[in-house]
Structure formats: C-alpha cells, structure tokens
Image (tube, rainbow, N blue to C red; front, side, top):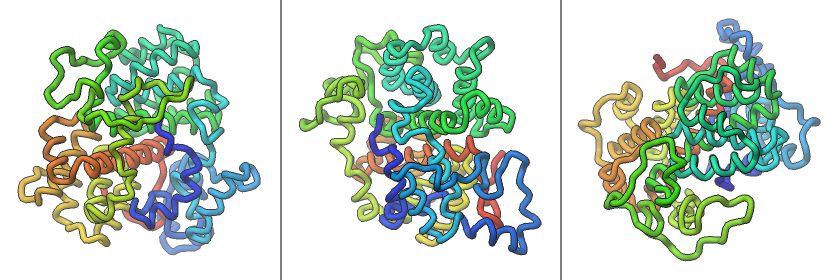
Length: 410
C-alpha cells in the first residue's frame, strides 16, 4: 500500500543513511575474502543453511542476473564498502525479489500476494488493512475457507504447500521472531527463491503498518463485519475524528485513488496520513540522530532482532545515547529516571511495535512533546525498521564476522 516500499528506494539507500536514517543493517565489516582470512574467522561457525558470502539463507545475487535498474542498486551497495560486504543484509535480500512491485507484479500472482498481505495484517491486528484486503483477496480468487484459517489462526493442515508456507512463515516471523531452517526450507521449495522473497517483503511491510496503528485508523462503521478483532462502534473514542476515522483531522489535498490499486476510502488510510507526514526529512533536524537511534533500538528489542540491535547500539553510542538508557531498552526496565522525551519514545515503541496498539494517553503525550508531524514520522521510522527486522529474521541474517552480539534474546 505504501509507495516508498518499492525496490527503487534501494538505489539511494546509501544517501538516505547519510541523511539521517542511520546505519542500515546490511553494512558488514569486510568482504567475504577478508573474512576468511581474518583471525576471528575460525571461530565464526555458521549453521548449515547460512551462505558464507551473504551470511543469510540465500546466496548473494549475481550482478549479471539482474535487470538494469537493479544493477544500479547492486552497484550502489557494492560501492558503499567497495566489496560484497555492502550487499550483505536487506539490500542483497531484496535483490532476489521477482519484481520491485511485489503486490501487483509478483510472478506469484495476486491471489497469493493478497494472502500474504492479510497474513501480515492479521498478525498486526490491523482491522483497517485486513478488511480492505480481505475484500480484494476474494476478488482475486482466494477462498473464504483459507481467509478464515488466517482470520481465526487455525492450523494450516490440509492447505496447499504454497498457502501453508505463506501462512506459517508469516506467523512465525510475527509471533516467534524466528523461522526454523525446516520451515524456511519448506517455503523455499514450495514457492521458489524470488517468490519467497516477494512474500517476505510483503508480509514484513503489512505486519508493521505503524502509521495506521499510530493514528488508530478505524474502519468505516459499515465495514465492521469483516474484522477479526474487536471493533469500536458508536460512540467512537474521543480522540477519533468522525470524517477521517483516525486521530488525524482530515486534510484537503489528498490525491484521488488509482482504480484497481487504491483500496482506502477517500479521506482515510495511508493517502490521508501522508498529508500529515514530513516524509522523514525534518526528523533528524528536529529530534536528532540520538533519539532516532533510540527509536530504532526499541523496535529491534521488541522484535528480538539481533543484527539491527547490535549494529544500531554501536551507532547509538556514537550519537551520544547513554549506556544507561540503552540498558533500559535492552533489559526492558521501567522508565523511571529517563528524560521525558526518551521515556516517551520507549513507551511509544513498546506499544506500537510490541502491542500493535497505542493508547490515547501515549499518543497525546508524544504529540505534545514532538508535535503531530514528528511523532507520526517517528512512528513511521519504527515501522521501516520493523520491516527490516522481519526480512532479516526470516532470512536469519548473521552479524558481520567478528562482531559480538549485544542483545540478549530468550
């Protein structure tokens, strides 16, 4: 649903990192050749399903196998480290996708990509996204019996291999923050490499539609019968505007929806939310990298994502975030003693990412401290890194050679 998720973003990912979105997790410390020759390489034991060149469950892509647009993304990532190390992680994984438009153009077909979307929406307990895409899934031929398996979280026994793989991987990513080698191998066999990456990207995006959660986007009242989770009927919560059905006042200027692509009613959903957003370009100037790195750490902690946590703990320290604050997040300690802005970010992240539900009090406090636009962009930043966490978790991305893990994971 969000246009900035396209693969074209990868071409400028290095610029984005410099501009204020932090060190992305695909950056490693050295090339594979250097790693093999390093003193610590002998202690770096990888599981059997991890490729040494990519340090995840898929090998690095070959440049000659890519189209011209993705060759540019490949070259940009390679140039960032002047080695294949720049291709380790999210960038390299995304280059395996079948298309940059994973929703509409994936070779997997619309029936199954809509299944991936509703799996992600269900795991995020996102009624608005769920309802829109259930209707679309039915139009694309997905059977109601399969929808109900997702809706009520029933076992996948008896489903086709592809359908079962999509649901199982999505559930494990969201609920367990871990996908076993056996589950991944089954999904890879059932879907194929490119289709599986398309599915993972789709589900990671939909499972972390943080702007919708942040503004508590409600359904139009006449859609409630589609929702699997409890819904709010009249009277609506006092912080919900009746026209936008969210915490944001409806603004003019929203672009008309594209037939066949835009599912949200006019004045609601992502198109309306974007009118209130700064697109992230003001966030560093207003909040600073120190607080942005704190938001990323909260996201990684709530999703038990070792690679994102470890690399961003190192970056957070460089940006001046105090070790005592990092330990509050690392060990999920009470917020007593934190500064007001730091405590607000940690609390917002714990609710937004950990619970998929932000209380009116938490929302109002964040808006008071940061302003509506920056609070929304902060929530969007968390969602972007939550998407990264999901992708790296399914592919079991490993840390750079020689880097000690810094996050205790149960």
